Length: 470
Image (tube, rainbow, N blue to C red; front, top):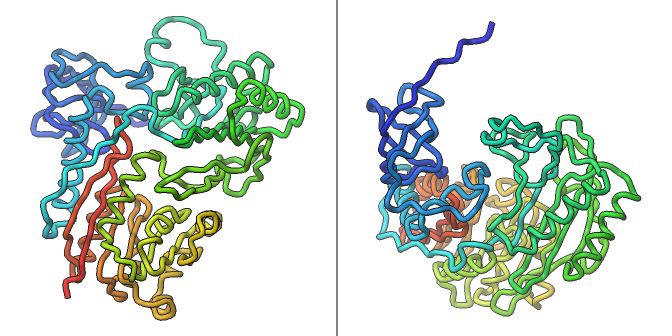
């Protein structure tokens, strides 16, 4: 027997007072906190309560009674449906204020450690077309908006190319124009969608793991190099060649054109074979004269120009003189390691993904950097006391972990190694604050610099400099 759903109310005239984590806004109702997406501080709105717990509720705006004075018109036609740019209705200077507060709240409330004055957040010079990488999904089950559902119209053609709808793994929102990447990305996506439909090629059905057109990935460098990877869900040689030839003819400016045939039940491509159809197997990003080769599997910060600002902050906090042994933990493709190598005596990078380490070594070789060493493996297994004894006690550790932060064993080895300085780069101030609390016994936070890598989203990067207490 199914549980009867509660009949939750529409609360009229709620005033939204602030922005919370994950891009939601906050109002109060009957002493309960209400989390509301796509609200702006100062909005007065009628809010439908969707979920009610003992200490909080979740809801959505059904009528905007009085818009906030700071509210602005979103640029994107998909705003409010696409789960990507949740802050487009808020001017960028206010977005930066909210992100600054997010960092402050995390470090103070979770870390509960002594802090210096937090530096003013570094905003991104570009707030549109700033991403160097986007992935789009093909689906035969497009997401229908409330307006479409209520129109009474029959939608027999549900083929779509775009982004997954949050909370609906098998539904994809068809994207006409995305403002996050250079417009060539929109042109290529829309061309491939229209061409495939004109030829009757099937779009992917995730529930049944069938369909020719599955995914596409677009990477664009600051210098204008373009990598396009088209992922097919079925091994149909004639259709694959037809699509790739059509793309190559339509877009001669593509620097690296590849395809993959992935018939697995998941979308991960790390174990897949990439077939080069045209051009090179990589594109190159440039930073201070250094060239970084980026392959289809490579990780690279997705805002290239702002990555340069982030790395300069990181290098500055490391206070390198040329005599230091540096450990770069979670080094990825060695971008930070190679970026600071010219100012250090030696840099040792550690990363879980073997392919990333091969990229790191290649980037050192391409740039003639000879004072780097790279190791692949699980951080808690590689970075041991024996490893430190073998390679030397680091003067500086640069740490850039995934969103989950560091394993306790890794924190323990760092504490035992006792580097003079630590620079902790994080994409999640909450887990960073937790780790800083563990480091606090031996390390004092001396500088905090938030950096906005992703305008119009709730995400914020934060760099913290620490020095050994004794």
